Length: 289
Image 1 (tube, rainbow, N blue to C red):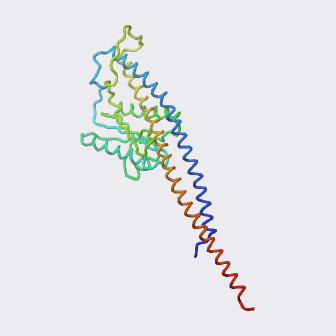
Image 2 (cartoon, rainbow, N blue to C red):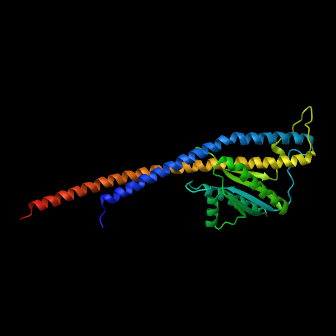
Image 3 (cartoon, rainbow, N blue to C red):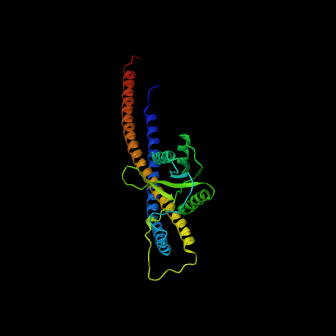
């Protein structure tokens, strides 16, 4: 059956609708990325306050200082992978899980067993396609103001494992916002908690505390891990939506090319139909009566 201009016109209408959907998705992704970036200053200010308190607590315990970490005895390695919640973000989740597999392979060489924790439904789907086993999963946040709730859930999972399992290390893997096309991936070591980042602070007057210094330091280190989780979730959310924005820009370009081709084909077919109609009319007029 030959192609008709009406068929092409229908396809042009469908492509126009697709273009509208792509533009809307691009706008939503850009807005969510901006929202996440706007939250970063507050998240980092919270982390800075906790860091200052840790430095003061270390000043009360000079024997806990550079080169020492919270002791964790075990050979279990937990890897947290912050993936995408939704599709249309290119290879975002695939790249995060590639990095996670590299980390778990390196841990295996050191005699550690690894457990993968996945955040993001799209990441769960990719892991299942790859037959990757994981011990826990959760949906990724869609808005930056949901990050604290998910960070609390993640922290609870980590400290449950810390109490019950022979945990050795906890590694967090997430993407960074990047205006360029390349996906920036960061690997953070959450546990054992490293005090090298916090030089002990000395003050003329010792701070007033209501907890023993060691207990205070343990509580503050837990709060700092929570702050790191919050920051990583917000950064990952911004990065995911930036990746989706780039994907939608590429899709918009492809749709525009497709639309140009369909419009050109529609004109060609319409011209052919007009020509055929003229030939038929001319043939009818010249036929003998």
